[in-house]
Structures are given as C-alpha cells and as structure tokens.
Length: 347
Image (cartoon, rainbow, N blue to C red; front, side, top):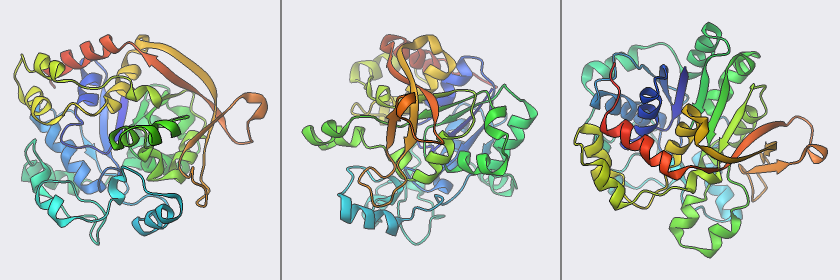
C-alpha cells in the first residue's frame, strides 16, 4: 500500500502508473505546493487519473497550500544574498505571459488561481472538481488515518515538498513509526560542481527544489522515526528520456502514451519515476549506502534546504540513518515505464 504525495502535473502520472502496474494499492494521491501551487497540482492529479478512468479507485486529497515558513518574498530575499537558483519552482516570479501560454501558476497574490491552458491532459470534469472541493479531509490527516488503519503496511512516497508529511509527523507522534517506509525524490549530495561547470539545464537538474521549497518540513520529515527511509537523490538524474524511448513507448497508443510522447520532452531525467520504481521493486537498486543525514535549516546559509551526510561517529544529535541510492538498473527502469504507460492498470 502507498500514499503518493507529489506536485502533480500534466506529465507526472507515471509514478502512480508504476505502483498500480506492480499491483500496489494506491490509497490516495495527495498534493503539495512545490513546482506550482497545491490547488493547481491537485487538479492535475484528478485530470491525469481521469485519463485512465482511475478516479473511482484512487482518491485525490488536497494538501497544504503554503510551506511551513517559506514564502515567495522570503525566498527572493535569500536569493539576493546567496545567488539565484536556475529553477525556483513555485517561487518563480509571477509571469502573466507564460501563464497565458500554458504555464502552471507561480508566485502571485492568489495561490488558488487556476490556469486551464496548462492542462494539456484535459481539464477534470466539474463533478470531479466539486467532489475534490467538498472533501473535508486534508493530506496530513488522511496520511495519519491510513497509517493507523494499516499499521506497518503503508509506504509514504514523496516527490515534491515534504510539507504534508511533516504536518502528519507533528499531528501524530506515532505516524512515522507506524508506516512501512518513507521514499523520497530529492536530497542531492556533492553536486555543487555540476551546478557551476555545465549548462543551466545541468544546474537545474541538480537544484534540490523539493527540499528548498520547505526546508523546515524536510528536516522534520527526515528526522522522524520511520522504520526505513530510501532517498532517490543523485540517482534520480541517472536516466534521461530520449526521442528513441518516446518513439518506442508510443508504438502502443493510448491517452497516457500520447501525453508522454507529445509533452514529456527529452531533456529531463526520470526523477519521480526513479523513486517510484525503486519503491515498488527494490531489486532495481544496484548500489546504495546507509548513513546519517540532516537538512540545513539555517536561513543565513548558502546551503539552506540542502542535505548533509554524516558517518555515525561524527553525526549531530537528533538525526537518523537513511538508505541513499547511488545506482539503479536503467534498462529495468525503461522496461517498467514502458509497460506501465503502454498497458496501464485499471480499476
């Protein structure tokens, strides 16, 4: 069983397809503010589930609208001191022109505004939107409820900011230890030279935006008492999409393969997909290390929101061990994605 928390978008459906294809029970998709505002992301989750008629069996639950402490203004002030990030997620400056062209909304006065043009997968039906808005549950309470209902059985997958998970940790002191595991995408280590010696795209690929949108939530989450934590950090950049793979997947046409072919592009790594794949099939992992980690939450630090690793004899108090994945079987990842997109699971 898994709860999948993400900043869902038009092309981020492959992680839940991978879980469903592996016969995992997806208890729900929860949405977070990271690449864009939570409200837009939850509607993307609905819309991409609807592509495969999956809304009857996979609910969408809205999460926190704002990070615990971070704001657009606070983030911009940090950048003035420590330098700009090549990718700023939801804290990119508001750009009306880009939004008119179909970009998901970023910083502005209204985090609840919706950009219909961004829904290349199709906008969800009015009935689905009404059901989402009338649901009184929130992501954190839903996570606590499900972990209490199925103790020791629920994986928590996080491929965006960790705000919702941190709130659940604070709501219930036994939430983390009652879960099966935490699997996250994010947490790069030793990538500073990649950020300065390559293109802006390479710097973008090594920007730890999932942690930096809400560093305090990342610290709360990664120091909680999970039975196991798997981190897909640097390894998430290992496998990059290609035109040849797009063509191969599109040999079987369906709504998912069509969106993948037309919109995924060939310049992004399979970030979220890597984390989902190693969760549902750990045998894909070829190399990993166990060590201790912490998140820098000093606002005055140039490493604010970044992960730092320790051996046990040198670690500070209050941190815990994680399994950090270094290498996966890239051919297996391609095979898993191809099968999940060409022949998606049904309700």
